[in-house]
Image (tube, rainbow over all chains, first blue to last red; front, side):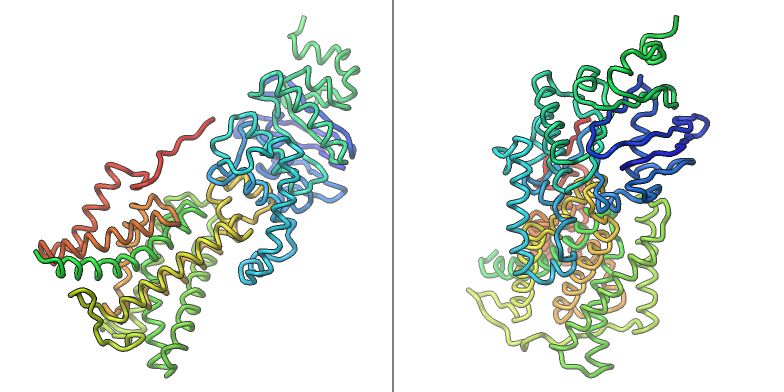
Length: 250
Length: 293
């Protein structure tokens, strides 16, 4: 599904990632973990087209996507969410999701703005589809609220709903549990499983070990910009190198 | 001070204010999509008037045909400006872009001067110039045209931004460009769109005001600054706040010119601009922005 091959990223004199390769299987939940500064977010930013890597290649479904801008990746059915949620603050919750659906709308932007009656019909369909995603993430009752006023946890749900509205095949989540309380984290774990059950491949960077060990089927461990290990949660927990990286040597 | 005099100043102030509002919305739309202040906005206002003149006098088209042609020509100029001057920048920082727009405006003004000379030209009013009297004040039919067209454009604009998907996508870009890209919106296309809409609106403003104030190669400077002032009062909103800002500016200017001295007309606008920037930089109606990290 997603293949990362020999990624190296150098910022000035700092090597943030060095020759990182792994692949992600369709329909699985994969976690990318590692101590602070391991390069997890950098890796995400490269995969999602925000940074361009110094060297190495990224493939999605066998097609090279290195260097493609984020909007092209959305059309190739890959989306991501952010640690500091990124919403359209002045728009309503429902409008946020409707914008996510716009990529799917059949008419081009120009046709859409010129042919008013038709684009209105299309909009009512989009509104319904958007409501479906709000329901999926459990924030239907907030549909008319201004997104900028949402509490953090609900904002995260909205960001996920908007990402799902793009109808992705793969979703990258950057620390989805960051800033959530334990109750909300449980809800998040359930939601991520439901997303996987829709057939969407999930990749997450996460600090919350309990969550990662609970929901991930495979884990990639990064340390100091290199891939340290890869395997099932059980294998990772028993891997002496991983334990050393987290707890310190000796 | 008599009532009919006040009414007279207010009415003529409202119609100039409507023009400022249209220009101000043009500023806001581009600002919201790109984060830059397009100081060439006034030149598209000038181009609207001058192209109308071109189609009227050189191509001998009737007024009703010359106007759409002029709007189309100015819009093409706006598109070219975005394609040739804004998009090619590899690392666009707001300050670079703003300076480019200033350069662009000087270039457009210079070319217009070469093409049409330094003379002031008149465009015939849309429907005669028999004054209409309202409660002791007189207005021209053109004033009504200005108000009607402005209201129409403001409503079409609002419909576009709030009730079409393409308009929503543009608003999304203004709130969060990065997230807009991530959900598949082509931000660069939205930037082009914003230039198209703004230059078309600017051209309309320039065309409807030309029968009253005449037009020349350099009218864009002052009109652009007044429109900028309206947008600042409105807190760079592309909606009602900027319309109110424009009308307020027009009326205050007209009252000031009438009651104090017409020599202070422009000074009043810029004093208001400075006051707003000092005291309420978020605009008269805006809330101060804060970002949660």
